[in-house]
Length: 237
Ligand SMILES: Nc1ncnc2c1ncn2[C@@H]1O[C@H](COP(=O)(O)OP(=O)(O)OP(=O)(O)O)[C@@H](O)[C@H]1O
Ligand SMILES: [Mg+2]
Image (cartoon, rainbow, N blue to C red; front, top):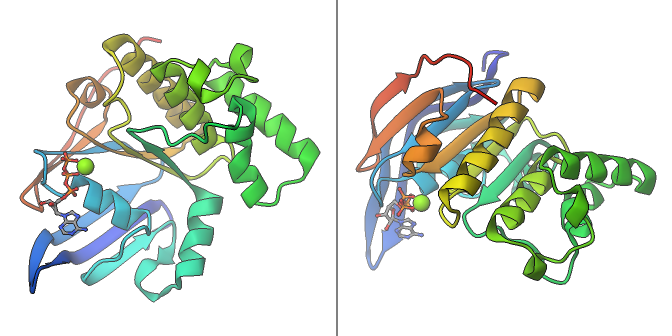
């Protein structure tokens, strides 16, 4: 693993048992992702985007090959070690926000810090800062039911970034949002990437998301069909 990579995958295959047989969801995947990349997995439904993202995040394990995320060999680690890696160094953003309905915005964002055993005073400081980052300071005491979809997703982003993870994995983060909110949350993530060098990997088929990506990895039938670096001028903020 070179110093600068956050993900290294070699000759990886993923098979799922289906009935008495197997379905091969990922075939011969070789992939390196460097620190501070802003990259996305794109491709048709069923091409393996979520499966690959879950394997990078240690939520699922490969059937064959090597997977190393943030310096940890995911094949030779225990369930508990992978959970600790996720808790301390990764952030997750999903299509369906996954906020706890009885908790306020503050409490939802605070959760990763409680799990990481950060003390109360430091916790408060980091939560307030993360909520400022996503522009939700005026909603800090609201519960998810009182928020719009865009505000829910911004809360989920604050929760994903509050412990300043090295790597954020986002699976269809804009799928439930309108165009304006989609652009808003993408701009927040571009800024995080630029200012904190946080690495991002998206799984998406949203053209709006693709417009912000600096590298697009195309999956087709579980294989990397194309891997392109996008040269683009600095984004307007
Ligand atoms: N647990 C599982 N058991 C069996 N097959 C699975 C399982 N999870 C995923 N698959 C299959 O693996 C393939 C890839 O699924 P995956 O969810 O990674 O696709 P995707 O590219 O994220 O699609 P979408 O754009 O619809 O989210 C699909 O054919 C899916 O049916
Ligand atoms: Mg998916």
